Amino acid sequence: MAPGNARDEVGFFGRLLMVGLPGPRVDKVARELVRELRVAGFIFFARNLEGPEQVWHLTRELQKEALFLGDLPLLLAVDQEGGPVQRLKAPFTIIPAARKLGASATPDEVRLLAKTVARELALVGLNMNLAPVLDVARGPECPQWERSFGPEPERVAAFGVGALQGYLAGGVIPVAKHFPGLGDTDRDSHEVLPTAQNPDPCRETDLFPFRRALAAGAPAVMTAHLKVPAWDIRPATLSQVALTDWLRRRLGFQGVIMTDDLEMGAIARDWPLFEAACQALAAGADLLLICNNWQAAFDTGERLRKETKLADRAQEAAARLARLRKSISPVLPDLKTIREYFARPTQPPAP
Image 1 (cartoon, rainbow, N blue to C red):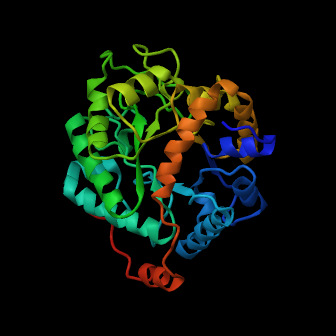
Image 2: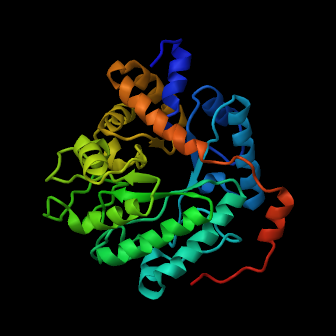
């Protein structure tokens, strides 16, 4: 990285971060994250989302902040999977749980549904959906059970690829998750670090849907906070074996690797946030996700700046993220279009 002052360098490492915002408006915190930390993007939760018009205003103002600086468009992400994980409620399309879709729909129906979902996200300025889930959940004891298309890898792959194609067709960046698969676990990574139960060191069952998704053009993959004993003692998110050896080299993925939230219990119980961020970057991750503690995001940028041995890895990650951000159009429909679309009669969940 070219030499510069400390503030510029912290901003450079901020380009590797996706951060949560405290509220539904562009406030002082949001402006500082864009202007000072120069984050790559934001992730939105219920605390940020009040309805179509408010989301449109929020995303529009955030993109204006970035473009004013001459920066690339921001990645603006949401978890709009369906079922138990759907941040945007009615009048947005209500999406059945993946478990239900995998049992009662077809991959083509899921593709069409995902295209509708993506178009709605794009209407209000959201350009990344943290979906589809490609975990092959073996049974109800798995925390991913309702979020998984089924216990068979072929079914998960077919429906996952259908969803991925629909999101892309609707103008939104999909993120395939959670690599290398949480389907063989019975512990929730939000709370503790789960350990893979599948004894197969090649994880053929769990990696099958990811192989299909990558072949279908998945632009981004999210990591799992999961320990695979046959691979490493570290969680996959922090493991060079998982991210570089397997995802990059063996599976040939060239897109963006994004971590799951580094504040989740599976990571936070054993690694301070700044240390987890450094280890994830060193392992091969490009985009580091910090969902709640925005102040910690500044601290993380500062810590990353001091890790000179990560400079080359950071340059590689920043270049990959820049390519993804260049694919985003920051131009939104006018507010009249938003009002007309969401004033339509509410449709029942489909299919």
